[in-house]
Image (cartoon, rainbow, N blue to C red; front, side, top):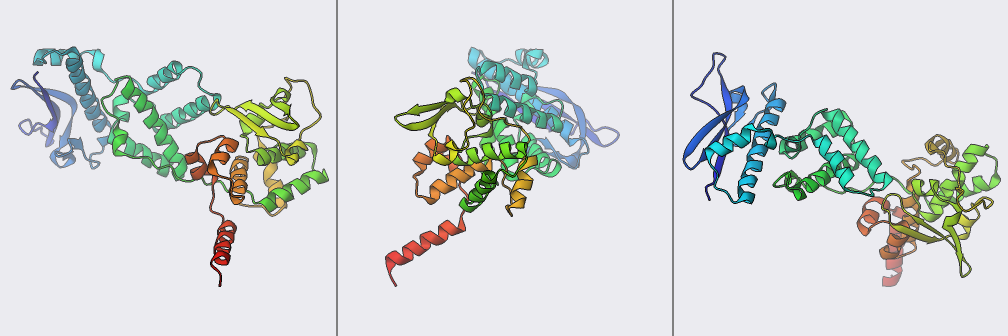
Length: 387
């Protein structure tokens, strides 16, 4: 089978008055050559011959790179068309396909919506994540094609946008890039692209920035709750936040928790629920401290806690009144449970079942370095070795 050879270049034989040159797609099939204009010109100094790209020194490099990516993506799609159909490519057929709308890049945003429709039963948390990430992408550009997103230029420019324009921390911008990679992986499975650009950009999974509460801080929060000196709303917020610190349950799961989820089995009270984020079942025994926080029982379908949705407004002054500072939002309750269990030498396999996440997530997001734990471990090793 004949091969389609293509290269992006400028035409040195077609200089213009302003000393620019037209950029073209040169296609060679069976020794026949065709030059397809890409619709823009460049100065010689602004064209990267080796990488077949426009340098950032060109004031319109962004749009010109997009045109190059579009052309290359169309070429890849046409090559795949010939390969799948097991047909010998000809220049006439190539030009016909290239000029048709069949191989134009689809909207990346339309494809995201297509993926959401295809993947039935996505958890509410996942749909919210999709929406947030799509909105971020639209802040970067209102119009994106699959081909451009699947390019090194996009990855580099979008990462710079997330860091320098939005001020995202490493863990946040990595999540945004991971979302793009996830969609492109699906595009690869759907044969919309031939390879995922992220093979050149491995994504790190940095540790979370949330700090866990110490055991003493949890105790001081509980002591304040037991005094019942707070006004009704802060008191209720503190109630279900402490419940989270005793169970490791996510805010959304606590919000949806109903009395039918509380079950007594062989003398032990359990909470059984479906995690909104993962759609996996969760089952935890309630320790006495958590049981004490349950209000008077209502009917089975009734929600247990009156979750507000703006907990930070109430928790911040409560924490500060007790001298508790640092990056410790509601979600820190999960890292708190994991850190306490870790200090008790509970194996990660057990902590995985309790917190309801994978080992990797637990290690990277819920396990924080603890100086006191390190000190205790070294002291125990010292005692073991003797003096």
